[in-house]
Length: 98
Figure 1 (cartoon, rainbow, N blue to C red):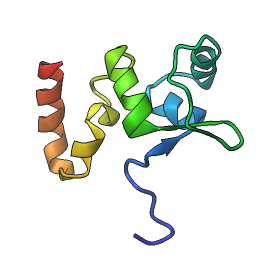
Figure 2: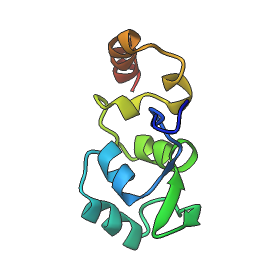
Figure 3: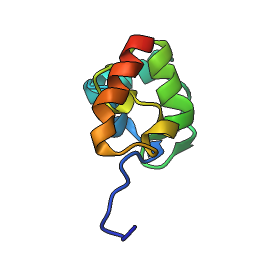
Figure 4: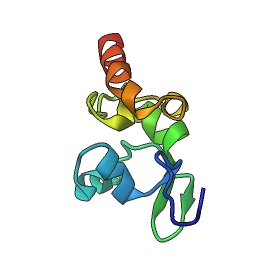
């Protein structure tokens, strides 16, 4: 990977990335944080940082905050193993499985 490429599914995420992946506003994510609803962040840089694969993804699936039609509804360990043309089929299978 060159320095100009961005990974499809980076592991570390902040408030902005969590909001984007869960199709919500940053203010909503900040409310979840202040109410203690979100998992605790692993790091703080200029704000809280989570590990998507280990912290946010399982929490979002468990609490049904993850849109089943989203690319990010695909389990992180599977996403890197499929080609773009396989994604629609995989998303349908996952949606049926719940």
